Length: 355
Image (cartoon, rainbow, N blue to C red):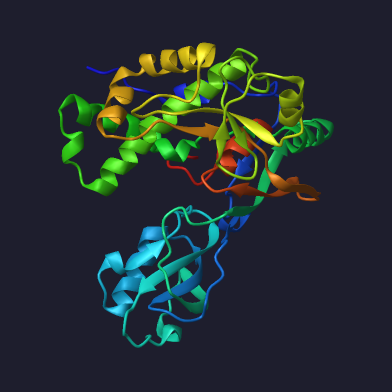
């Protein structure tokens, strides 16, 4: 029997900053968590794909996609989106519907309590998964506890030095069930027989967990912000990675946030990392042989992800009702909860079991 992971395994991931006596409630209302996609595509206004900008409240992304397909009389595969968005929030994102040679329906007739269509444009290509620049967040934290000076200090530290680029708890499912379910399926030799979408969720969870553990170890070793022999670097404005001998110039670029240190996204093939970094990452993967072996057998290639996450345009404003509104932008694939985790102890009111 493979040992099961629990919530405290995630909670025990290392913090970059000393934990302060700060706490707050999250998602007391859906309006407390607002997300807007940042889309890099300029829509042409013509083509066989109909793009819709939609604001949803209290529904998940797949549900909206299903409703769009139903309204158009199409199969679900005709509807695409860049990424999943939280159900317990107000989120604005794009969907595309493949309608070659078809007349558009009367979109104004699609009325629903949980979402509204803001804009409709034609384009020559479908919206692919991951095809967004990032997301803009506006988050209101309520019932603040802790010293006001500590709140300002911690937010200022995050603004200056960023946070660990951890995958959020939602990647691993309720009570870490995505990881535990994956382990059960592997043990019974059933993972490869899962439908591609479900299998992808489990593979992503396993890969993300190994990454998180590598980052946590770098923080504990006090090398999270300090390059060591064998490190791989990533340009701040892209996913391009490179290796280079350690130098004062390289350290200065790291301090100026022009580049970031990276950690492994586990998979098959040789790692770009070398020396002590490659050895340490292999050591983490060896702690979870069931996961690392499954990822390699699935054919996922060894990749890299930045260890540091820098929130862009981070601002905050304290309100008279003992709350603070925090706004920032994150690159795609990054989690707002990774920012909040370094800020304070969060009680997510929307989670099951909250009282």
